[in-house]
Image 1 (cartoon, rainbow, N blue to C red):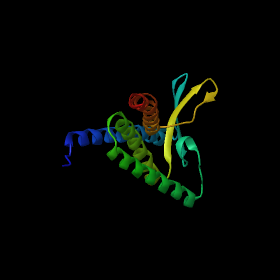
Image 2: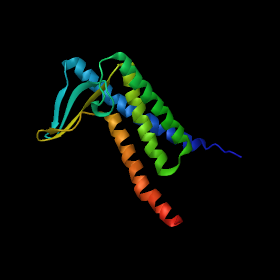
Image 3: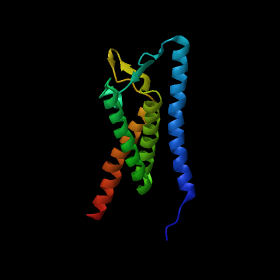
Image 4: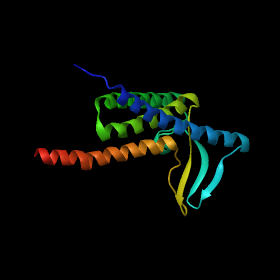
Length: 166
């Protein structure tokens, strides 16, 4: 018979909420600074600044469109992918599940912004000298970490399982 493990469900839910709220809190803070100062351009270190931009595209500003129909279609695709990730989470276990939980929580954070603000506030500006990486946010960090964990899982964990089977 199918047994529900409520402890694991609670842990998964807490990871998703912690990811989502870490992203929300950071964005709310930056937006409050922007409201008070009329802009955000904060020097943190020689390689890290906080600089607010509004991203209407997908990851790192790619596919930015001004037309609302295309924006809405991209948002619908993102919502669909987020739903698919949830289904995969339900079917996954172990290390892979935690990576997907990070991706899902980050995706929810950015999806919330796309719906609520019609754009995603990005504000972390990492750079080395004059080379600036794309400006990103906390949700993007969790999504990227989740993807790195999935790659790690595929290369090292699943590869070892396949070698033992062969």
